Length: 271
Ligand code: DGL
Image 1 (cartoon, rainbow, N blue to C red):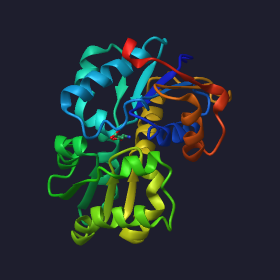
Image 2: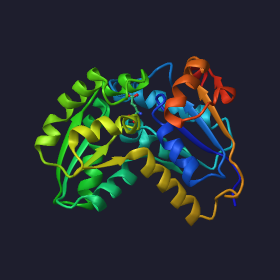
Image 3: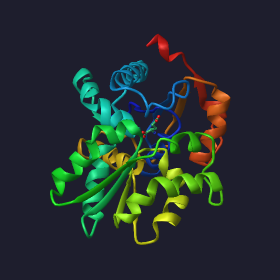
């Protein structure tokens, strides 16, 4: 047993889709979450900037004694995972490998769509990971830069005409390619599950990358016999680089509960 907390981070709120699944799969685990809400979005930035931000995010999380870190961010996982792994002596999990595994397993026709931020699609990381598992797969990738700001602004519901229009425009080529599986390569996107699935149709399976990463973390800790007592109720603490009140208000949308007494603002530039 290892009673130390798991660190989880994202550029903003999106990683909470992963935390939600971790709470379900790993109820006994303590979690320290950092959302870089002062600098979100990362997805339109250069590799150098994303790596610099990611290093600071990890340095902050490592001010706690952690047993593992989950990068609950497609952009950081596709762009900075190798650097972070090289520089840190604890297990660091990204979302790419778990999501690629799920997509390769679920697809019937080997026709898979991938959506993510500009940086994620530029990296080609999902394509490489899926192709390694399923070399004959046909892949269609599309950057969707406006989706993160829409989610951060709470514009996630069916009937939101702006969101529906943006989703339609981005996903038209992916739908036209006839994919049967769509990797939501950014952890913000599961909030748009209804709108995306209405547009893509019932025959397309959506892969929630945060959920797959949570499952991978559960598998790893189980295999290594490093789970905390599953009968206890894990303690979760949340940190943000911008207003704690705003974080708590938006977190309600992601977690379905009020966490305002557990959010603190930190100065990420000091790490
Ligand atoms: N949740 C992040 C991701 O998975 C959002 C990226 C961003 O900040 O642009 O890519």
